[in-house]
Amino acid sequence: MRVIDTGPDPSKVYRPEHEANKTTEEKTGFRNFESGDLIERVYNTYKLMHTNQTMDFVKQKHAEWAGCSHTKMTVMESLDALDKLVDESDPDVDFPNSFHAFQTAEGIRKAHPDKDWFQLVGLIHDIGKIMALWGQPQWAVVGDTFPVGCHFQNSIVFKDSTFAENPDNNNPSYNTKYGIYKPNCGLDNVYMSWGHDEYIYRVMKFNNCSIPEEGLYMIRFHSFYPWHTHGDYTYLCNDKDLKMLPWVKEFNKFDLYTKSTDLPDVENLKPYYQRLIDKYCPGKLYW
Image (cartoon, rainbow, N blue to C red; front, side, top):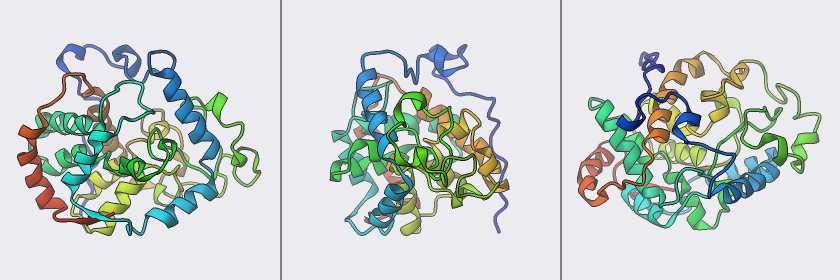
């Protein structure tokens, strides 16, 4: 059994050079869910998400997507497809998601040149959003994730104004602290709201990609902001989840703080990242 490292020091926060003295999302201006040119679009996406993401809906999506029976394509083909996708839940940027993939990967490459698997995770963490190009509404693909089957915690984005019409919100089996779960049951046993995180995690597992467990946790839980940023839902976590948390936090620094309108030269970067794809998830994958 491989020994699990406790992970990098979560206090060493990556920032672009011009943000070096800023220590919070608010100070950097990232994840502003109160104002801005994109706020109406963002709020409407979350309102639909929080109304429709129920336990029944999530189980339906697992049945529909976890078997990876939709198509076959390479990782690079999926990245190219994201040229057509702008994430409607993101208050920070309004350009295609493919650029964000390379921005994240390059930030990790500079800070962690010895961890090529980590760089690859930065590149592929959002490619599950391809579901939105196959007919899935964005509220079932993008945005922050949260557990279903238990009480919706206050740290969820727009929590106070968006859950009133969710049937699970008034279901006595679901609206207590633990709901259907046991204390410290482990996140692997928790149903998360359906989206690109869980989907691309399932794709990686189905295709036996050799990304380390730390990387798979980053992929699966990078949008679980109530947990990795706000400290909620730790009562559902087991020891393995808590050991992995610093890795998810480390990834989040690059996912968030590398966003910039200074777009990378994607074509120039592709040969390097193709080598990483060939190493860890080669050929055509089942999706």
